[in-house]
Image (cartoon, rainbow, N blue to C red):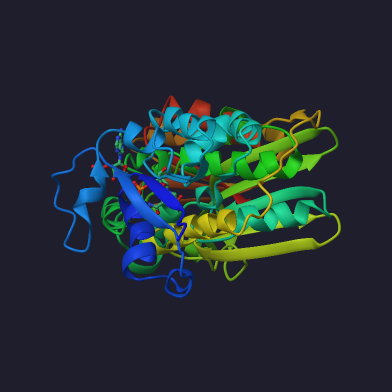
Length: 412
Ligand code: NAP
Ligand code: HSE
């Protein structure tokens, strides 16, 4: 009996989840299909590491060629993380006419056109459902929508780790450091969580979604991003007192021949659609010219949801469905940060009277109407509607005088 063979690159949180669905927990497909595919080789850095009893250790290797050059392997699942050597391995797999399924948003965001083209030239599929939104079937949904619609807006909470941190800080008064540690223990965070908390993970995901949506490669580098590391418990409390919750929001939209992108913390009105998405859950809202608004939510990080997306892609290939098609020829360009404007929340920690006056004067210089609160060593401003570039000017000036500041746009 002919059986499709799979090589796994990586056996961490996601790789182990894939292994379990195929071998141990037996997802429905694998219980019912007589000739279900088999994992025949797994690349790791250390074959001696204890990985529990329910693993066939004879499958482990530290030599990528055992997978990439094995002609009997049909599908390579790339779940290692980082750029190199994974990019090199994926290109070699495609050029050796193996289908590739990956969860790696970094290589997809940085090299989507090259990878899709290489897959096409070799008549194989490149699938990356798990690269955005964990278990949420967003890439497939978008492919379907794009057959009928022009998508002109993408909004979302796209990172499980940071949404978990903000939810824990807000609902349980957990410290930032403690919440991050738990997110790491639960397998949500990247190997280097800097990517999560500084925004690279979100902007890579926004880059993938926006490139597909607007038919042009929008590089991660083109996306303005600000992390969540300067959020303090006082920000959580002050925003709550004013009827908001703090969320880490990714937004892009297309207007005329310009696209606009932003990844930044934002104050969201309580009980609204972004505000109620908590912990490792993600949400993605798309706007299509025919369908209108569509919202899709689910677990955006963690072993089982992500492995579900990877195995879903494997089954998609087994069912011989059409490969991902993308057109990046739309002549659009970056419209810059001022596509976004709104009321802003600023908080400056004030240690002396000079800082107080300087911070006050600076905001006064740029903003006519604002509400001001001084509480326990912090100066808070809720401004009128201002362009995002004005908020950045205020930040730049105040950074020279105050060390501890935080600001975020209010999304009504
Ligand atoms: P992880 O737990 O750090 O696992 C990485 C695996 O890759 C480990 O098994 C490691 O080997 C192996 N590996 C790393 N570098 C290697 C190298 N140079 N040579 C051989 N093996 C190597 O990572 P993960 O959380 O599973 O994430 C994997 C990918 O999925 C990343 O691209 C991540 O962004 C993406 N992703 C993760 C999630 C999530 O919730 N965790 C969700 C969506 C997407 P050892 O076991 O020997 O250390
Ligand atoms: N570190 C990522 C997150 C994993 O927390 O969302 C899922 O892509």
